[in-house]
Length: 178
View 1 (cartoon, rainbow, N blue to C red):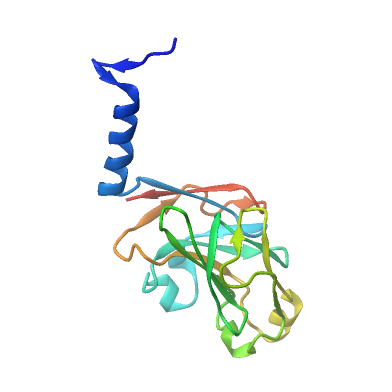
View 2: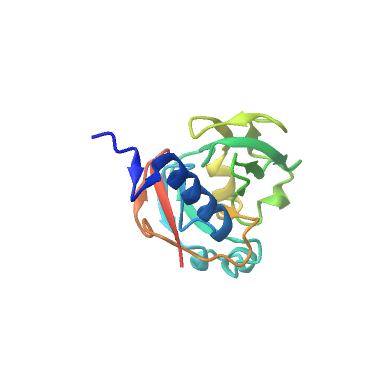
């Protein structure tokens, strides 16, 4: 059945109202793709207090089992840190996402990292954005935990449905607003 009207209202108008409602009052759920194969943990379990306290925003973390890091969202690369350990992506709806590879990896000054994206590149969940030498991090007693942070919604808190689960790179991850 192709229902054109919804209680006497054009369904296209109703769809536009729903989009406007989401823009005005925020999304109830955000969807990401796992940037790397590993185990998802909540940010509160990350050993770095900057991330665990949501100082940069909320999101999720993955303890990686692979050295290949992919974009968790489709969008435009808006930041590539000179130390190669962090990349920022802005989605078409304006959500700003930071992918931060490892804890205190800034101290490596780029050693052990390779980036595959530049500023203004368009990426999808199929875009490999970086690699990290996990053995180097382990040798230096640096955690490889990779954080995915929503940086432009500082007061929003999310519950990750897939917490404490093993995930494959590219698997859909749901963040529900709480």
